[in-house]
Amino acid sequence: MNATVNSAERAVLDWLAQRQVAMVELIEALVNIDSGSADKSGVDAVGERIIRFLGDHGIRCDVIPSERYGNALRARVGGGPGRPIVLMGHRDTVFPRGEAERRRFHVADGRGHGPGCADMKSGLVMNAFVLAALQACSGAAGPVVGLFTGDEEIGSPFSRPVIESEARNARAVFNAEPGRPGGKVVIGRKGGLFMWLDVTGKAAHAGASPADGISAIEEIAHKIIALHALADPAKGITLNVGTVAGGQTVNTVAPSARAEFDLRFVRHADRDTAMAAIERIVATHHLAGATARLAVIAEFLPLVQSAGSKQLYEHYVACTQTLGLEVEGIHTGGCADSGFAASVGAPTLCATGPTGARAHSPEEYVEIASLVPRAQTLALAIMRLDRG
Ligand SMILES: [Zn+2]
Image (tube, rainbow, N blue to C red; front, side, top):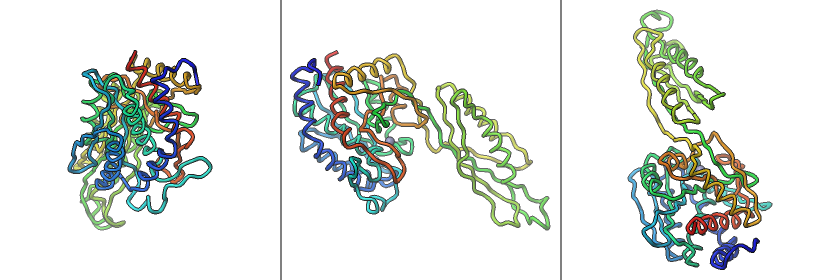
């Protein structure tokens, strides 16, 4: 370790260095609780476990209750009136109830496995341990806030305003999504919308009186072709109709049809242009009498690297170098809560969590050896930002 680490920093780094086993134990506890986004009781059970851990380390946690989704938790370490440094993480996963029973957390070949182990229960654990280390060693000069939210995988319908209001005042935001193989962090993310399109036509006998019908399937087919034509790979705009459903029976003119699709974009301006084009497609009818309705299911804002976010990234890189580590910043088409933080102007860095991969799949894993170094890097970045 670099000799430039001072004694206050060393105390925090040493505290974390001794906690790998405890971190794995807490990851195991969290992974073995099912917490799909729609499973409020499961997401809140994960929250209770985190509240208990923080409480055991002298950290109070406020609960911001949600009726429908997992509650948002807000923990705070370090005093003073200063602007906070915010650590973010989400407790929900994409997996159904029963998955944790089928695939219990286990470690094999240096990797932890189990639903949500990388995305992002290890990140939650890392943030909680960093808060605990700062508390135990009085390492935080200014306020450090930990947000543990419960609905990221579905676009944070409840947590978004909580994140935005916290981020608006933040000096820096670190989102503990999994670090990419090799320890890479994420400096740019696409924004995205999930939408559905409903088309209504009119049923009629397909053989006896087809002219009395209006085929919702024919209408939606035209619309799907037009929607796919909006993709512009050179600009980083993608549009994919991922599901279609419709019709009644093979011998009936289809009275209804639905398509679900996913739009992604790099720049805020491209969102508005694409949405205007989508609205036009929805309003343009190929068959007289067909009607269409569009709804947004979820929305994520892009993580666009501002000057402040670039500085934060460079600061983080300098801290990894102090610890003898290496890190690189990458862009990804995946969406996350960091886009909401960055979009209100907070200097934001994403994927600072323990290294992992294959999120949303049964092959998901987290590198156990990355738990302590990632926590140490984050803690050092916080302490040096506090002083800087
Ligand atoms: Zn995630």
